[in-house]
Each structure stands twice: as C-alpha cells, then as structure tokens.
Length: 89
Image 1 (cartoon, one colour):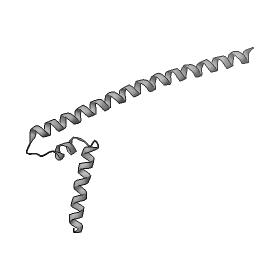
Image 2 (cartoon, helix red, strand yellow):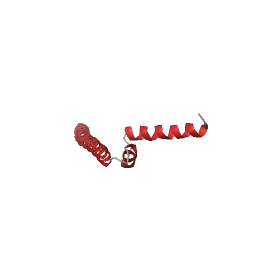
Image 3 (tube, one colour):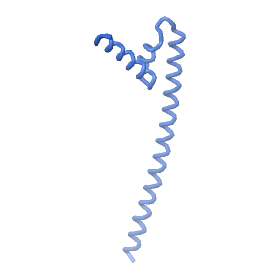
Image 4 (cartoon, helix red, strand yellow):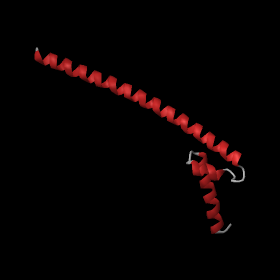
C-alpha cells in the first residue's frame, strides 16, 4: 500500500473510532450512510439517548458530591466548636 493509501485508511479508522467512542453529532451523521436518512435518524436518536443517560449519571454524581461536601462542612464546624469550647474552659 502506498503512503497516501495508508493515510486514507488511518483517517477512516480514526473517524470510526471517534464515532464509536462518543464523538459529536457530526461524527454520527458521517458514520451512517447519507443515502439512508432513517438509519441516520436512528443513530442520532441512539446518541441522544446515550448523552441523556450520561447527563443523568453526572447530575446524580453532583448531588452526591454536594451532599458529602455539606456533611464534611458540618463535621468541620463541629470540630472547631468543640475545640473552642475546650480552649475556653
């Protein structure tokens, strides 16, 4: 294979990898044949569903982290209050 042919093959593989690993909408639309709009629509809907799941998981993680941060803040306040009380005796 010539160098130009090898570069073209690498480019195609890179596009397919990006599409499969969560590329943007443009990657999904180019990965599916432009001649089949139904397949393209299904691919876009699948990508949207995947992104919605990732967003829901990220929002849940944020809620968990915020709760944990609040608990830590309360514990630190309690320790500071306890130390101040011990020093004032």
